Length: 544
Image 1: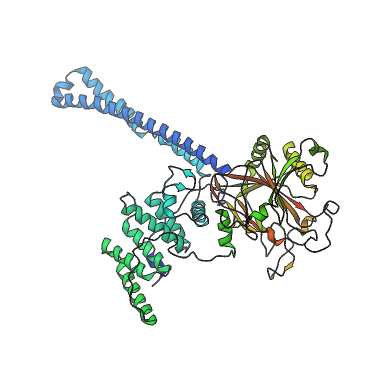
Image 2: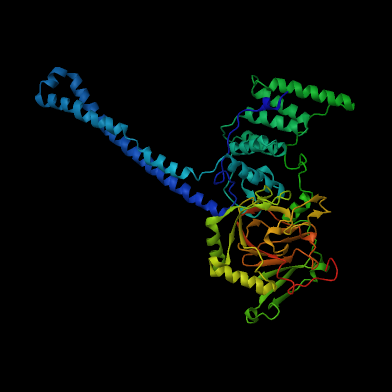
């Protein structure tokens, strides 16, 4: 039996804006869509008003002509005996009916259609909505939220009227189904069925949902439940073209399995399908579970003994003149590897200027392909980013200088200031900031030197600026040693990616957790090795 026999017709999805098929991942730019939609609604109202005005005029004509024709048809000869009536009849048929014809032919929709045409180039496409649906599923997995929580708008610490209808849930399920992601397909088809059973109206029928759900459950290996769901489908639609054949196939398959295992038939569980009913398939990320647990604030390795080794202090950059009168407030976030946070690193005015400069050029963030060294987009990094040069604005030059003053490292060989905006579901899965050796024993594969062409050595350190608070989600986590650092607007965190020997510190593998609610703005400076020879001298051992 072929898989496509179960398919109905796919409905294209549409939710996030893109440019030339590029998935939209930035709240900063996405706000433009809100204003666009408001403008279109206003245009629609003007069209309705014009149609109503036209209809009122046509009704007025109809009422007047109806009265005239009733009078004239009651005694046509007597009516036309009066010369004025004869003249007005000629005039009406020659002139006034032509005017009425022109009125009816007027098309008030031209302005509205023209307005839509202008904005259509900025509308989302099918790829964008698919990306948005997958973002919801990513949040569902990371923060262990069932489909009903999303459907009812019940997110942690957030009260909202944003709800998903039966048809919305069904389309979410079809997005997963189309990607052969039956784990998520089951969760969303089940939610659509539950809401339909609860009496919610929908365009999609119960038979359609059961058709998709039964096959998705079968793909998850739960044949007894697939049989039960298919029986429901037959009961709802006895003439369904596939249900009978599917049911017989499932029953034969189950019978064969039970005979092979010498087991008796056990009816399907009556418990509804929910998060945890089935095991999520493993993917490419080995530390998936620990990474997602840290994003939820679970599995943190901050013990009392470790906490006792963390301090706060004033940092004057070892007597830097620019910091003597106003030293930076420095807090330890982690002891080993040493991660610090600087308070009041950026002012609100500086943040707004940086965002203002970055917004027009935000583009899908890229990563270096480990096989080729070429920059490319990747599903594990979902955000929009832009690069700002010091010469563009005094604020950028001032921020760069401040980073140099605080760290004591030159930024002359550093990369440009990168600004990133993570929308809902935006993330950057566990990764290293530094480039690993051409042949990395831990990876057991060749990896090109990503920064060789720059001539500035490897990424020695990372300076990360948080430019917004985040309502929920969006932490920076380090799965190797169980740390989670939460965004606080105006603060920055700093750590070294390399030991003094130049060897990579593999403990610094980190991730940007998906944003659950809100918008996350960050900027970062990657500081390279060249120029630091006397600012951070080599150590005596490989791990100094």
